[in-house]
Amino acid sequence: MRGGLRWLDVHSLKQYNKSFTELEADKRLAIVDQIAFPDKAAPN
Image (cartoon, rainbow, N blue to C red; front, top):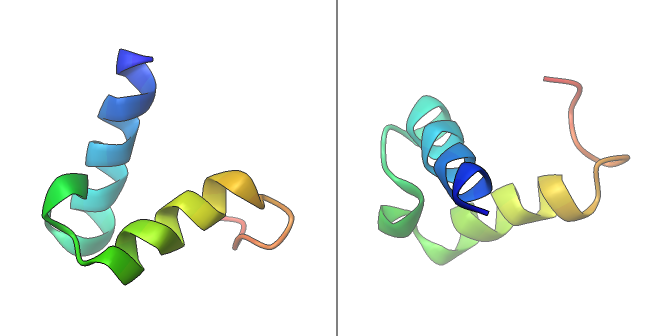
């Protein structure tokens, strides 16, 4: 579980230069959607 939470922060930092908890709600939701619906996510 901690590894997954750490991944969220690392991914957020790479994509938006902010930790996951610092992101606006729409950006947090976009990341969660990438996890929940991987078929719709971009290959990267």
